[in-house]
Each structure stands twice: as structure tokens, then as C-alpha cells.
Length: 250
Image (cartoon, rainbow, N blue to C red; front, side, top):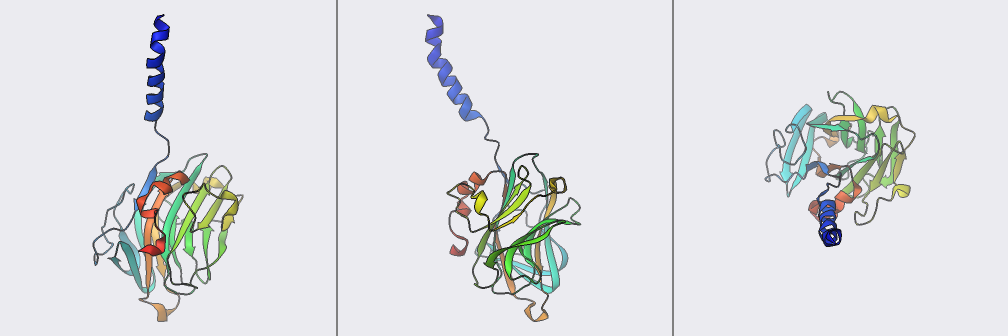
């Protein structure tokens, strides 16, 4: 009879153990740019998952915060703000990057977020607006740009761009303003780069915020960054309070 008396205890223990197990998914990097209005980006170290603070890596970039968003004006032809990370990609599975971008009607000027090598010397993946391009898109090293059909400056409103770096399917997918309450629509991406050599995308050492001006008449025109997250589960995005509202609600 003793084994029968132990059954309820054993069942309860198994249930509690199951809930205690980690899910394996986590927010690897977060930055909501929720600093005081008027502050500068240099040396800010908020958010989670980073290995150092923000700093201007190249060029002259004027950065300030307004209503929890980063406002960037490039004073020269190009400017980069940089922050270090240490992310090793899984052999199988997916890494996701989410960022809200608003280029304020500025045509064909580079404005993007770049995942770079540890030394920061090479772009591995870039998401945003490429040089001379009229549409939002994604760049992958060795393959060039893949554009969406979403014009990048037709409307002056923020856009939520989400990358899926899929190490199983060997592709990078870009989604524009996806619904995080639903599963990842992997067969309905807005842009896809396939048949990739994923060995070149296994380690990311820094994030660059790229703000460039190919047109001198547009120098000092603002671009806006917000809500930058990297995770290893699409479902994580639905749990982030800053992503509950649309990017244009601020």
C-alpha cells in the first residue's frame, strides 16, 4: 500500500519540477532608450545584456532623448554609435532582433541597425534603409540587400522591423510590423535571404546604429530609434511591455 500513498506526492513533485525548469528562451539584449529627455547617448548603459555603454564610434553624431526615444542627427556624411555585446548563435534554432525605426521622410539615406563582428570591423547583418534604397530591407554579408515592398520614406511614421536569423533553415527573414500575439509567420516574411553560409553569422560582438547622409542638404535632419531587443524566441516579444503598443503610439 505504501506505493499507492506516495502517488499523489510523486505527481505533485513532477508538476512542480516541470514548472521549475527554465524555458531555454530569454531576452538576450534589451534597450528601450528610456533615458531623461535632453540627455546624450554617449556613456549611457541602461538596458540588459550589453557588455559596455554606448559611444560614438565614428563621425559626428548629435544624439538626444525625447519621450523615451533616441533622436539622432548626423552632422557629417556618416556617423555610427556603437555598443558591445557577446552573442554566440545556436547551432540550431533562431535569433530574433526587433527595432523601431523612423526616418522622418528622409529619402535614400543609410539609416539602420547593424550586427557586427567582435572587433566591429565588418557588417554581418544590417536592417533598415540602405544607401540609395527606397524600401526597408535587410543586408547579409556576402549576399547584399533584400528589399521589402514597404517604402522607407513614403510616410513619416515609425516602423517595427523584426529579423529572424534561422540557423536551421539557413536564412534571414525580415518582418514589417508583425503581430506578436500570433506565431511567427515564417512563410509570409516581407524579405528573405536564403541558402546562407551560417558559419559566417555565428558570433556577434557589437551593435551599430548607423546614421548617414549622402545628401549634404539633409545633414542635421533627425532619425529616430526605439525598442531594440534580441532574443531567441518569437514568443518572448509578446511578453515585453514596451512592444504591446504600436511603434507610432509614442
